[in-house]
Image (cartoon, rainbow, N blue to C red; front, side, top):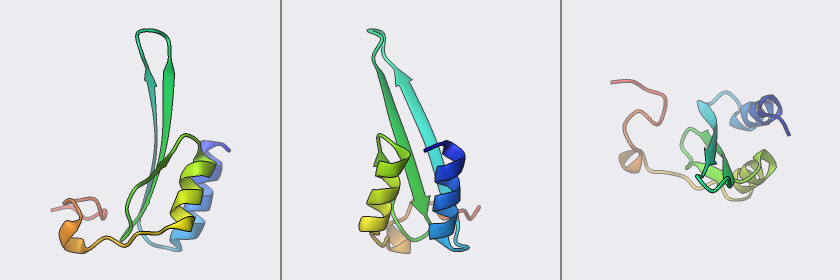
Length: 80
């Protein structure tokens, strides 16, 4: 699944709510690489997988609600 495909599926799941998607690639000195795919929907927690399909499956399987008081400032897309 491409980044754009994952973004589209996440947007559909979010259904108008704020969402975020990110990809992190780490290359170690010994040549190993680690990929991390992360998805977030407002009011939920970040879900991380080694593929987009994995991260989205985790999101859909166990949407954990996050109390606004527990959410780091700015994570809900608001500023200030």
